Image 1 (cartoon, rainbow, N blue to C red):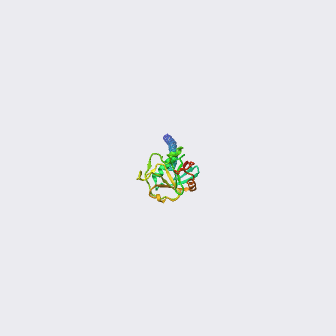
Image 2 (image 1 turned 45 degrees about the horizontal axis):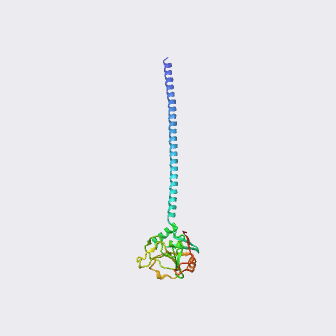
Image 3 (image 1 turned 90 degrees about the vertical axis):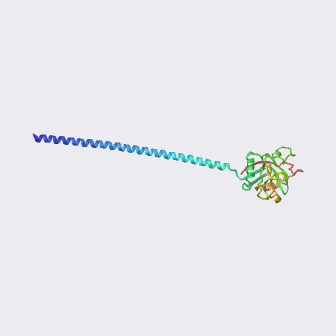
Length: 242
């Protein structure tokens, strides 16, 4: 009887131990599964966040590149060429501007070119073997008596450095008696077509013809009146940057 009771007690203890073991394994497995799911979820969220960060970075880089491109374009467009083409009724004259030697004259000339100031003006004074002069807004009308007396209403401080050579572009001006500082006219200019070294140190040279000097030489030979103004107008139709 005692032996049977002992067997029953041992059997019960074994059963309880086995049940506890199985439940413990099941709980551990559940916990492990939950931990794995949490790790996978965290990893997925991290990957998504990294992907979002990469996309944001790409978008930012793209915007930066676009901005840089725009800035470069603006910088490029903001600086005009130092080569201009003067389209006349007798042909085209290409001129290189001397920005280093005469920055104020060049800046003023570019401003007038951009505004279309020279369009319709004429070469109102031409002297064979010397020069052709133009740029006076008074020359746009039919009154020839005041040609050579007009301008934009201001003068340019002298920047006398470069010498006069055939093809030189220089600023016309009033004489020393009324203009001791040798300031140039705000718009009138002349192109040298012959010998003009005697003007060195007296007038500001701010460019030179690089193509079309033959056109200037044709212009100087046209028929002119007593004031050296061409009888048939030689018109500057347009000046543009190359």
